Image (tube, rainbow over all chains, first blue to last red; front, top):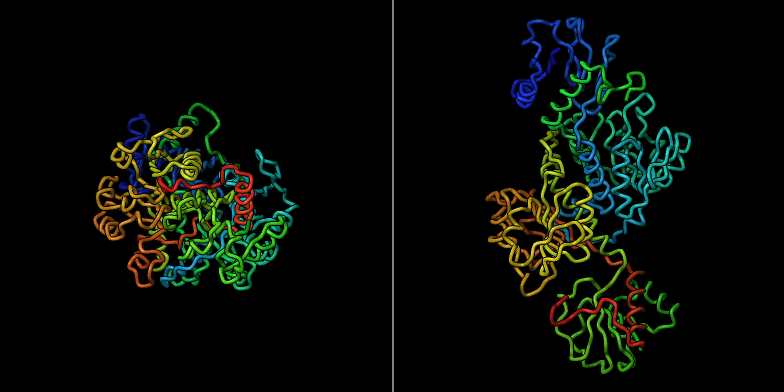
Length: 303
Length: 303
């Protein structure tokens, strides 16, 4: 068994020493492969075109927590997402930060600061602000707990509609009710056929007037022009995006220069190499022992 | 008994209806006073010069939670700070937001956004970041609980050095140890003789290299030039200020244009008129009943 890590030697340094220490084989870069038959595991953001080159490939591990960039894999090849203990908390931290920045009118104050303008405006208590979270997986649940603990009125929306701890969660068919109660809307959905383009004009129109958007799902879920229209029309007052459409956002895109929009370059989750290599080792051991693979993705459902 | 509210009729509207409903007398603006002898309570940010005009004045209520703007009051006149249930949570929210913004390098990403530059940089898990809170009163305790709940390693520093819940708190004499362990330093201290100018070159030099500053105490505690030198020299990497020195910050001040510094115009706590009038009514009733005044300030200690 060997892991082929599609990366540069520089980036892979931490991985190589972790694999050496564990007595497992790692090969960095396709050009370093001498015997394709020994490759059983492949770690990459997107796989090389010619996967047929590796007759014994059993598992592809995504370099990120998301897997929507992955093409369909050959029959019998498992797909695993990156697992970094702490990465979900890291995304939660970004979401809580972005929500507070919207709640406390940071886009307004940043614009005033650029003019050297010291001008307070009335604020709101968290307990009077309703936060709606689309996607109540592990990250959504963590965000709901932290924001709820700070006094925000939190509700969720998910496929199952299953309540999480003390947080009410609306099901698929109750999207409109959920949206009408979301002063700050947080998107944490995975990218699927159903969620592609879900943040559109129709959805923005169902939010309370002047709502704020916090987007840490996937760029392809967001219609940026519809967001701009909603900002201009007053349906939205501001937005904070960690993902954009397209991504990366071109330097001349209007959103960079719109004071109502704050953008971070997909850094809500930043992979930690140490955590990544520990997870890959665990996947290899699980494969050998015929145990369930940590982070295994159901390739039909897409998450 | 009557409350003189030094304010405009427009700002006082909520107050007048609350006092009417409670059957208590309120007078808005000194020019509306016909019988100075009936004024027993005065609500203001700073009092009028000639307090001798009100022979029966017993209590001055500060319009804000801070009282350092108040001059010494005549013998026998009590000083009370504004109490808004929820205002401390509001400051906590600002502090948590500012801490997360420093932790997640928002000053760096805002500067890149201005150039339309999509460029991620490595991030840190909260559990690897040490947060030090100067001032462990109610707000400091709330902030410690929320940040600790998110995984940050939190410690405090206070006059008493009394531990709060699970948070270790250093005493006065252990300031240097406390500072050496504060990757993000939060100042929530009241302004006293001892804390004036406390955020100076000497203090910044004791922080870990590249630390971040979050300041929601008082402007006069901060030596802005020393902060600039610390930013230039690398002792500090960034700062987020809700209070400045001087305050308001003039439009042409360098700090507005320094990308390492984010400034909000003293809005961590924004007074809510409803909560303010409820508190003032309670102070009047307590005066009449000879009960302890809610929010009473020890004028010798200054808080």
